[in-house]
Image (cartoon, rainbow, N blue to C red; front, side, top):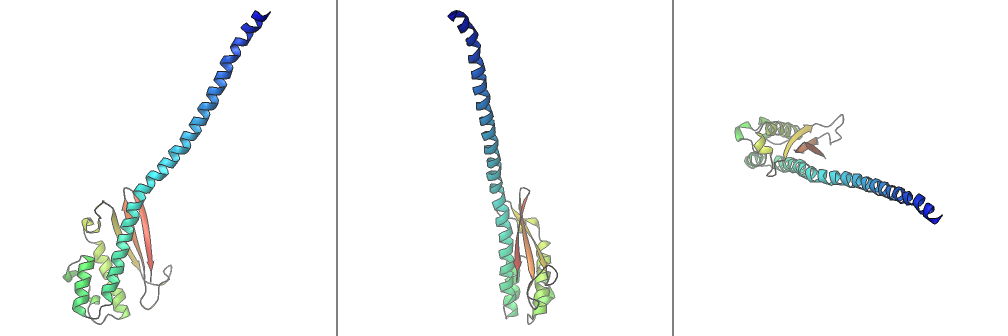
Amino acid sequence: MKLETLKEEKGITIYLVLIVLVVTLGASLGLSSIFLRQLRLVGGVGVSMPAYHAAEAGAERLLRLDTCLIMEDETERLTCIEEVSGIDNADIPADCEGAGEPGDERDCRTGVVEEMNLLPEAERTLDNGAQYDFAIEDPGGDCEGNNDWGYCATSTGSFEGVVRRVEIVR
């Protein structure tokens, strides 16, 4: 009698082992999918940061341009614009000359930014290969800048297909 019972119970071990294996396999696959998602997320941060830094570098360049525009001495102003923007003195818009009244300042800024966007990509590329571009908009519509002298600007940085933007409202 005992021999027959043992023969019948030997097969249950295989079923128990299979159940334990299936549960272990399911848990490991579930955990690996979670870890893979996290790895992809962390890997994206590595590409996102250079794009953001490029956008920030473009925004800093625009803000440095603002410091040039408020200079009272015309020669200093034009020299500063040339150094900050990277455009030739001959390509600096005529609106940048003279007293620097709000209308002239706005037109000067817009003209210089348009010229900066025409520069070769190498002029707007950081050492790590990230690039930036500018867009500028006068107050009104979506731009809530000061109507007398304000503006809205967007600096867009890109790196390996990832795009980040920094907005300036003045």
